[in-house]
Length: 216
Image 1 (cartoon, rainbow, N blue to C red):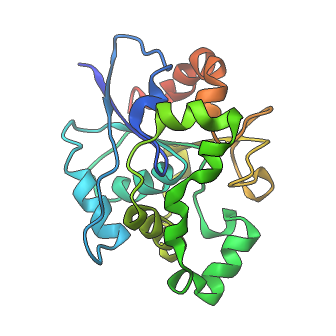
Image 2 (tube, one colour):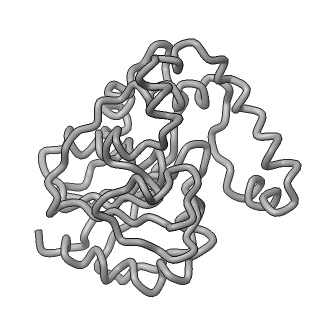
């Protein structure tokens, strides 16, 4: 029987970010995408709704950035899962960058006008990222982006069993700096978008890393 794998992209990214990964035939890969949050929907309630899309038993769960945060919450809702793989993500509030921890402590996320993130003008105007923006952008409404920012800082991180967790982090990640990350596989010159920019590394090493989950 094929091993089910579910992949969740990061905030405002589409599942196309996984298109460069190559999978042996024993894996059955399902790509997830973000849905518009409902009015006043909590992160836990949102995770419960997305978890309904995971219909195959005992899957491997993969999440990038905020998708990794979401996939950890989803793991707590499933009757069984083989393992969780985090890419360019965090697994505790202590791994947030300092400025985010300050916002969380002062509860500024409930006061700041976070809707300005929706413009993504800095991507559109930067030549280096313009093509990436148009190729990989997913859901990016003002409501969704503001919700993501607030819920990340409001979220109560679950503790998953270490033996069921793999964390892959780039040493050039400026969103979630590696200096704050514990117990991870460190990727040289890996940025926050290394699932795209370092796809050759993932093609070469990723499947062998998750093989430990295959027999669970």
